[in-house]
Image (spheres, rainbow, N blue to C red):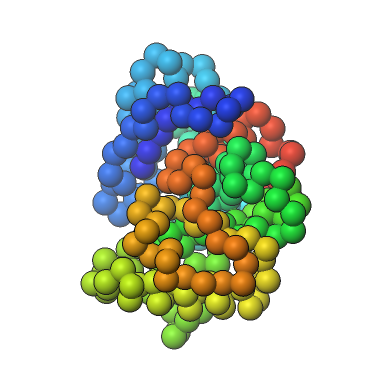
Length: 242
Ligand code: BGC
């Protein structure tokens, strides 16, 4: 789990990012305690600032509706209210990949982009954000397309590379299958690639090829933090019914 303070005029982090490993099992109370600790680590500067929280689950009207790599306690859970009560302040709550999408839409590679941009985050799971003509279509969950009877993120996420002990080139072949399938289904104009692995693009990007242009997220692995923070400015603009 990570946090930072963001300048909403520039979309840049104004502090170093602070980070604590996600608590084992990712149960709600432990995640809340860790969030509190992270905010504490940001010091006095964070006092009174609006707070955006992004989270790896389907988020609909402040409720988390799924739990792929976290505790099942989050399924159909009033998460936004839980964080607001627990942290004693209002928050803006959103799916993690959708947050990254908002960051790229407002301050990065999808700004002013025509047509459909599909952003994917490659980490523990695969997150996705659909950005169409300046708006986010939330909760697309492409990591859960079925592939060999399982969610495709089990084969193609960054953690799958480690779990299956794949060389970068072998993992890129799994990724290529994922992007080809997504391209066939949605014909995007641009793919953006984010998540932890976006700091090592040279290891896998040369092996990927799609009709649509493919680029790394400008904000790399900070896009989630920046996008969640940016919700403090306006919940309406850029959002299609999250
Ligand atoms: C979750 C998504 C999340 C993605 C990236 C998936 O397993 O279902 O909600 O965006 O992981 O964290």
